[in-house]
Length: 201
Image (cartoon, rainbow, N blue to C red; front, side):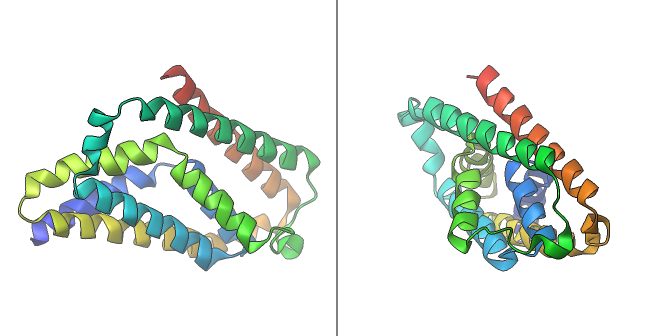
């Protein structure tokens, strides 16, 4: 059972470590100290739900209804292009610094809506959680539940560490230039991921 849990933890952590749209958003919220707990919890709970569905065998849906995959792919690409453009606009406009950032005028509802969109409109999330983790969990029968629990714990560990650990970078982001660099980086990440989705369509 412990082997299954450790395997689930390790694999899940490896999948989400690579920077992506969701991670970039969590990092930015952590730097701004805006709704940090809510955003980290939303990401972790979303992952836990998807991992649970994958381990429970929901990955079979892709075989039964393959027509759903293109919708997820194109919907995610459109959202990422728009979010990337928004980041480039923020970088061009500039003038943001950590001391005055606060929540940037963003409401809690808007932050959580963006977080949910970055999670649930990302086709890679479904491939990683439903397909990959779901199928690999069957190798650890009858301890699939332990595998799924380990994977979910990895998600909670990562997102809360990223969100709250971002504060260590606060001195750097006290300068507006650092925010511009971050926004450009986020925009590039969004558009690269979107391009990958479009070219893979």
